[in-house]
Image 1 (cartoon, helix red, strand yellow):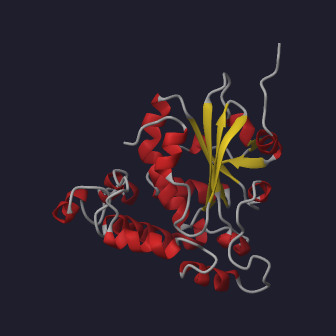
Image 2 (cartoon, rainbow, N blue to C red):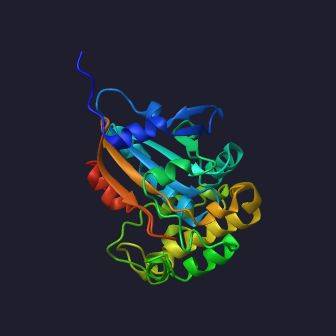
Length: 261
């Protein structure tokens, strides 16, 4: 029987050892691929206490039902421990642990050319590298992303915010209901809508920072990305540019042939 063709990136996934967030056991991300040539999204989050990870995971969770219906396999990996991943899964609103994996040293991230962040080789405190990134230095698009969260973006799909403004990731204690923003318009992301979800995420992250952040603090600036496969063949790769400039969910859905929600 002829073997299914595989791209070099699939081979790298097969070689990469990660830990299952569900069991703590070592495995390969390639083992999470279904048979039969189905499409697979491999989302590489940043570390478990990062804004990118929270927001990207929330968007995936919102779209997971339609991805499942379309037969698209979704798995995600993040930087840090199994215990941190389990805490993260709860805080973002119940990310399925059987789809979640941990790369404590971010070894797989380097294999796919994901950015290590601002001044990665500079021998200084990693928090001093993170601060410039928050200001957009070495993190292109961050300031624009922050600004859009406040002023809104009519072209953006903000349907995902409804899950979290109602409090899905806050135990039913969201700050406001989505309908509160109707006075500001009904199209796209209204002013302050996304910014409010980000504020809720910050409220989740700060008191849990020690449980979420990786043991190796040099990894707090490590960026992620996403790989899209058709069977074992890579069809597209996304690489984060910096803080809040993670994989474009709308474009990712189009790539796998799934309409936006």
